[in-house]
Image (cartoon, rainbow, N blue to C red; front, side, top):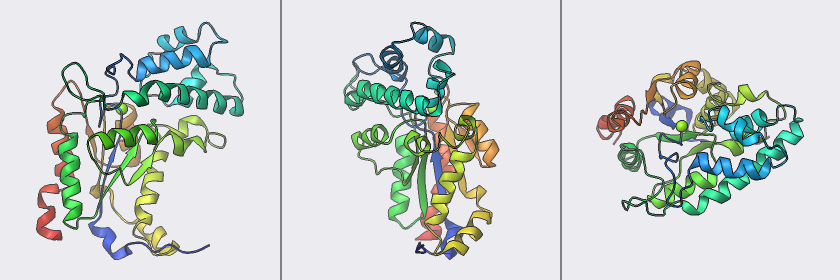
Length: 276
Ligand SMILES: [Mg+2]
């Protein structure tokens, strides 16, 4: 197998990474879209169609607390607990496709107050633009997403605001291929496995070969990482399991302050000083 050639392992010591959840952390996708469809409503429409063979499916979904930041596979499994791995994969794919059909064309449409759906969570755009500026000034900052959502959806939201896409995305597409070999709870938050998939890709940006990769994976880097999320169990749990700093994005609180805390943890204020 060919060895990779990265930025060079000696640069890893000044590398930083911001890892975010997407829904409710970067964008308020739970707010219904201009046509009245939010993530929850889209799931309800999709469940009624995909699980049309089970008249109780929608009631089960509601009794389970609805979306609750679960992955599509978790939702499908809760509605069809006896499905085979192959059957679960098929139901999950159908659920995802139908849900996306409902939501994709709503991205960028104006809400009654003129804001575009989905609204960015206050503070997120500012933090992201500071990172983009720091990168342009030569800072080694990587951005990553760990989400049960989908690449096309996330990218379209970024397009609306002219943001560069996250460098690393671990989403339902990433995890989907692992459903048949790993138990679901190992693949989903608060399990740290999605974090390790991010870390491996981050480290690999700097490693020149397999030996570097192994060295960098085990070298201390946790203080140069931060994870932001809006779920006090799933997101905070992932950060705790991974042993990295966590910033809680609480929509009921001051999210601007939370995103400024993310900037502080990444020392964005001092970037230009020591890296230019
Ligand atoms: Mg979330």
